[in-house]
Length: 133
Image (cartoon, rainbow, N blue to C red; front, side):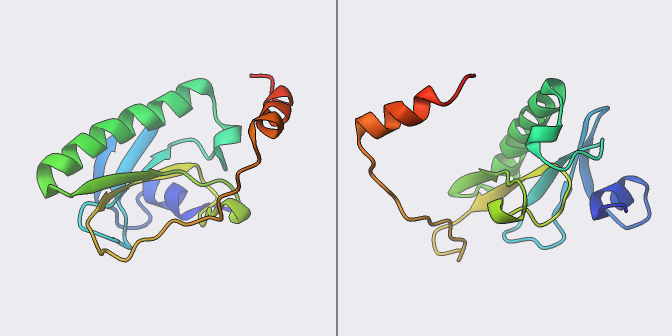
């Protein structure tokens, strides 16, 4: 089954593209939170960041940076949020690897909150020991 992003790439749906290359494409989010809200997505149908290649991951961030610079110049937001979510529990709503470049303004109604925990340095070291990067 095709995602909405794959349908956009095939020109089956209207799309306001701002960038495209061999690995990624960027387009205006149809659900603009604030003017200048852009989605940067992989061309290949990768579901999450865990499924893409290193080159695709690097291309996503490289293009996100270029888009962020353009958004800053065109819309002069007070700030920018770059958000990438994976799987439903991680807030992903479209099962196709993408990130949002979201211009931000004070009082724009966008919230990102989570309950902070302070486990202490020993627990942090235990958790770090479980990772092998």
